[in-house]
Length: 67
Image (cartoon, rainbow, N blue to C red; front, side, top):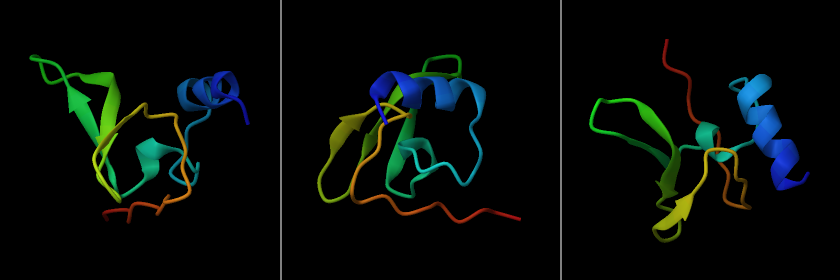
């Protein structure tokens, strides 16, 4: 899947089952001063690296859904 396809998927058809960084337990979303999400974040596994919410990697582990 290309970056453009992942970006469209993120913006139009995102579900908790979608294997994108935004749904990974290692991904931390960044926020602006007003507390709104911005389209970037960072991954902490195995080291800190900048990621976009629609990126993917081989270390993906699905977040546990809180009930």
